[in-house]
Image (tube, rainbow, N blue to C red; front, side, top):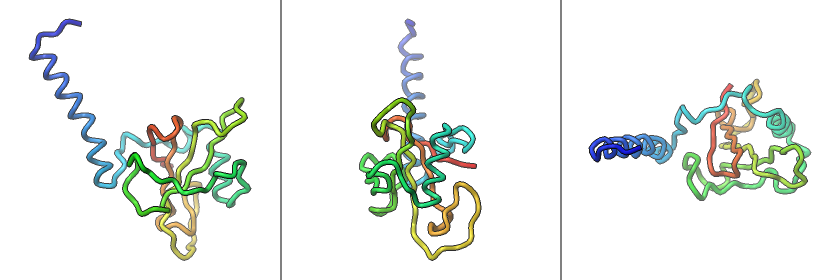
Amino acid sequence: MNYPRAIAAALLAALLAAAAVPAAAFARGEAPASRELRLQELPPEAHYTLKLIHGNGPFPFDRDGITFGNYEKRLPAAPRGHYREYTVITPGLKHRGARRIVLGCERQAPVKVSGPLQLPHCRGGGEFYYTADHYQSFRRIVE
C-alpha cells in the first residue's frame, strides 16, 4: 500500500512500541501474559514429556535434562542451572526435532504439591515453557 509519510511513520512507531513491551517485560524477569499457552493447547507429545519430567524419566534422548543456558535471554533472567531442557518428540522424525519444554526450577526441600505443572522439589512448583521452533520463541505453560 502507498501510505502518506505521516501515517507510515505512525504505523512504524506503533509497531516498534508494541515490540518493546515484551522485551521490557523479559528484561524485568517477567514473561508477558500474551506469551502464555494453556496446558490443554499443548500437543499430546508435550503431555508425555511432562509425565516423564514428573517421573524423572526415563527420557528418550541423552540430552534431556541438561542445563538450558538462556544465552539469547528469551526467558526471564535466572542463575545458571535454573533452566533444564527436555525434548518434545515430533512424530515422523528420527532426531530430536525443534520442540522442547524448558523447566525453570529453584530447588527446595520437597513439599506436597499437585497438578501437572507442579514439581515438589521446585520453589512454587517450577515454571514450564514450551518452544516449537528450537528456542526462537517461548510460551509459558499455564493450567
